Amino acid sequence: MAQKSNDDIKQLPFERAIEELESIVKRLEEGKVPLEESVAIYERGEALKRRCEELLRQAEARVEKITLDATGKPAGTAPLDVE
Image (tube, rainbow, N blue to C red; front, side, top):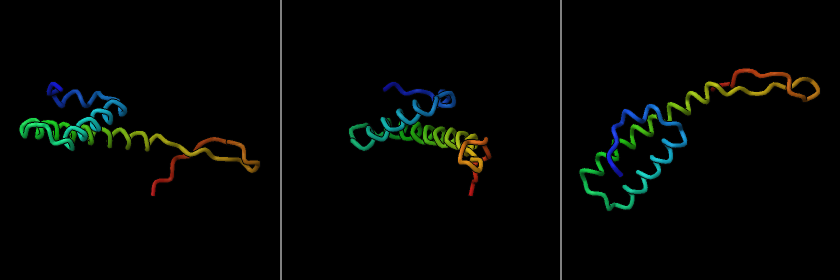
């Protein structure tokens, strides 16, 4: 894997970021990566982890629960209870 600048991470969608993070974890767990490269891909993995967490927080903020009327039919939405 060619070393990429971490600047591109800010543009990655969640699915791509998590896929690359999983790939990095697998490579590091195998233990066949030279030390210098291990450090570099570990740092990229940390940046990918932060990107995934950021995207999950954004998604969570947008989630709404469906409210039901007296008959149990959907009546609208309300903000997600965050506790």
